Each structure stands twice: as C-alpha cells, then as structure tokens.
Figure 1 (tube, rainbow, N blue to C red):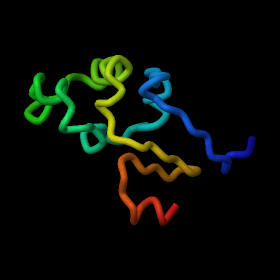
Figure 2 (figure 1 turned 180 degrees about the horizontal axis):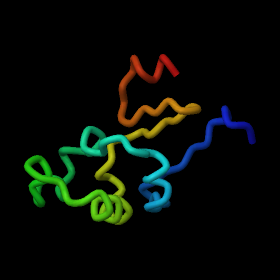
Figure 3 (figure 1 turned 60 degrees about the vertical axis):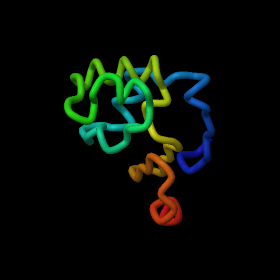
Length: 90
C-alpha cells in the first residue's frame, strides 16, 4: 500500500487509539474538530472548558462520535468534518 492509497475505517466501530489521535492531531488544537452536538460535549460543558488533551483523547476513544466525520488525510494535509472546498483541494 502506498502513502496515497485510500484507507477507509469506521472509527465508530473500531475506535481510534490515543496514539492514533496523537498522530492525527500532532500539535494542532482538537477543539475545532469536536462534534458540538454530541450529548457528552454538551453535558460536560466542553464549550466553556475542555479537559486535558490526555483526558479528551481517552474520552474520544470511548465516544468516537465526539469527533466530526470524516477524517481524511493525504500526506500532511488533514481534513476533519465535511468541508467540500477542503476535500476538493485534496
């Protein structure tokens, strides 16, 4: 498999690991990619304050729908959530 091959994964069925989340986000902020409509996001008041990155990644592992979908990476470019313009750029 080359680095340009498309790999599809339903992370609602096969959760992302903390290591995979660290690879996906690197040093980037996670907040813009959270699903603000998810019950856990709302119940825990994440709009006002997020838990630590470590806690957040562990929670995303348990509640994968906290992340917007899809996650698409091509090389170093990353698109999370349906953004037609950014997807077309890939």
